[in-house]
Image 1: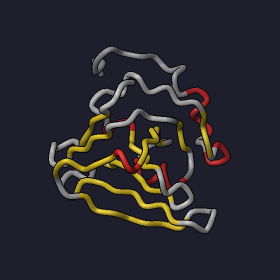
Image 2 (image 1 turned 90 degrees about the horizontal axis):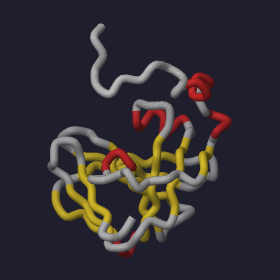
Image 3 (image 1 turned 90 degrees about the vertical axis):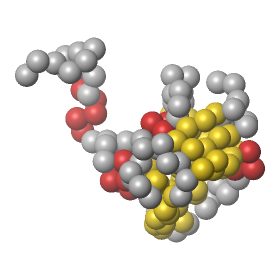
Length: 138
């Protein structure tokens, strides 16, 4: 992926940009990410904090204490609630963008999965179910 990396929320209220390329992407299966996304995991893209900026809109933050004892702050749109990015105290130089909020996430290739001890047992067969290019007739 070449910079800039751009993204935003579902309603279009929040827009962000990073002028640098990502240095890491991953799937996080921790229970906090599961609950924050409403899914089985979060796919996250790391970018340098110094190159990241919110272009428009208001975000709200929610901070928790991680197992490390350090804080994790997740930010989301105040209007539609879309999860957008996180800040992790143990990595203060990075911003972790939610891949689903990227304008183009086709380039994301997660290099690892973390907190797999919290991974949902049904994830192993998640892609073994029938697939449909659009909504199937029910």
